[in-house]
Image 1 (cartoon, rainbow, N blue to C red):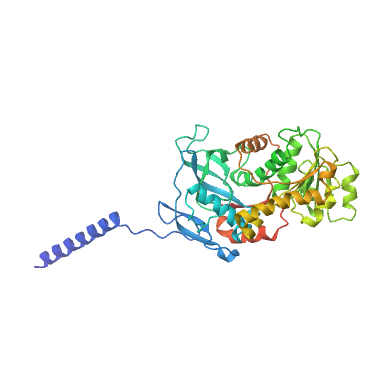
Image 2: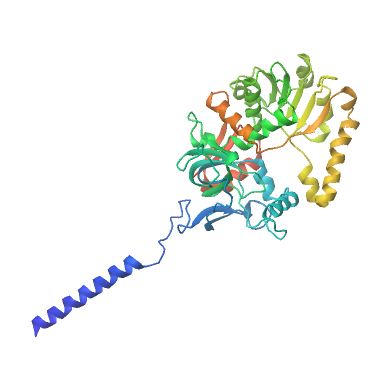
Length: 403
């Protein structure tokens, strides 16, 4: 009897162990995700920072159950993000800046006028690894390549574990840059490139020897603009605050002026007038006329501001009314300031996702002529603090988030 009970007990233990093994093997229960890891809860999910309505930093929410993006276009590339940067446009868009025009572009692209922007993922430039690509993407980009790229403001952003971008907005990472450095190049870089090459017409007017003044040479756009101009052979002058002068001089610019000092306008004009003034500092409209007097007369000189009212006008007046106001805002200042009467012009510069610019920035970086300046590197889980730092301004370069 004792032997029988012992045998029965062993059989029950064996059956229980087998059952537990089967449950373990075939269970669909998902293991909990480490809160300190930026990773989706399941294989087809990803982690991402989102906003579900416009507002302040309190709107930023970290989700680990966002559907991983898929390739809907044969020219698209799926990248697993290793690093990304925060740009002022991210903070502005969080507060609804540009929502009328940008959402209209989204609806037209989707062929759905009911398309909504929320939940919205912000973030414009990134670096990471290609994990999938469309059928029309050539061998220039292969799965496994480490790349850097950018995505325009109307597209889903890259403050996420994965991002999809068009092949023309992505390039293999320069070998001499790490992913943190490469991740902060393209949005600010393409803003500077398009403002100078397209708005400033340096694509058709050789930049070598031209006198260019960059206002705000120590910021994200300014540091890249002065380096590009130096590489193209332009005669570069720039302004910044006292404590940023050593940084700007380290970029090869010798003619650097402290804008906080009295008599700075006279000092800027002492060496002669300029072919182009690039306002990377975002000066208020009331201060622009004083700088227009520093432009060469009847030489097609240009003052280029990156503080365009285009998106603000469409936000306030709607698409049609905003565009009419934009036309007036572009023409009237040229007349009232007398710029046109001196053969000069006031223009708006923009970010432009153009493949020629991506390739040029990559070439300059690979040759050591373009070095990204990083103010601070943070973990992507600290994204709200990074947004606050950019919002507060006075940065020396870019704020980067690593994954």
